[in-house]
Image 1 (cartoon, rainbow, N blue to C red):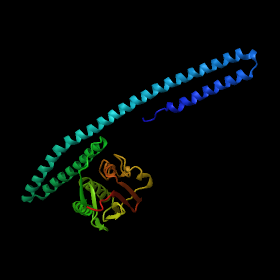
Image 2: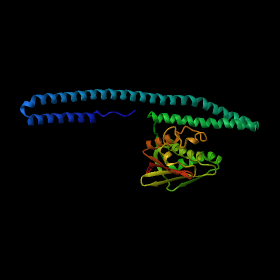
Image 3: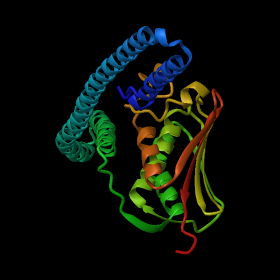
Image 4: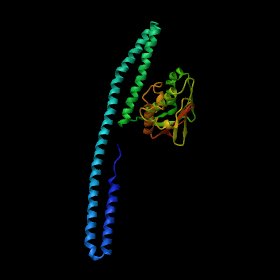
Length: 310
């Protein structure tokens, strides 16, 4: 509830109207015969007093309403802060036992592998894989709460963007292989230096690339490009997946939104990835945009300021 009534706009209007009536009164005093002065004067004064009373009542009413709106806004801001802190605290509390579960599942998998118990190995691998998925969701919540509370910190360093891209593609190769995707890398200008938070830039690429892998049907093709243009560094991720409609593009950067709610059950997640990505890009004075055709695929373009001389 951010709407406020503007007294600065309303008051001059009423005062102007009162001044108009005063001018009209003076005009009547000058033009009306002397015998009619008394009656004209009384009527005019009463009209002016009535208007002043209305104006004063209006100002008091608007002042009360503005105060109520300000109080409501303060309460909403406090509730939003409490929500953000709650998400952060719960996420941290969940991450600790989940890390323990993942550690023990790895040990159990190694033991069962030595015993050649293939059936139970698959069960444990499923536990570990789902734990990793849950950990990723928790990390998204933690990142989102930090961004919302303004606690996002950047650790700047100089690095080559193509190295981060290659590293990210290598780490996500297994996920791509499970869906029989091919990932192509095209570095047009090398080296491409950035002065940025390396971890955050990697997270940007991970989020976009994971999105491409997730929303591209099996045996798809994903292309990652980097190039320079003037004083900007560009990172592109193109896929031939399900695509995004023009109406949905306006929503994809909103928290807890996915391109199409009908995919929510099929494609797990909170819909925080792109919201976090946009915030991370903007924190580096960059911008992100998407071009997409439903049924044909999407192209995400990230633009960041680059270091010309590293």
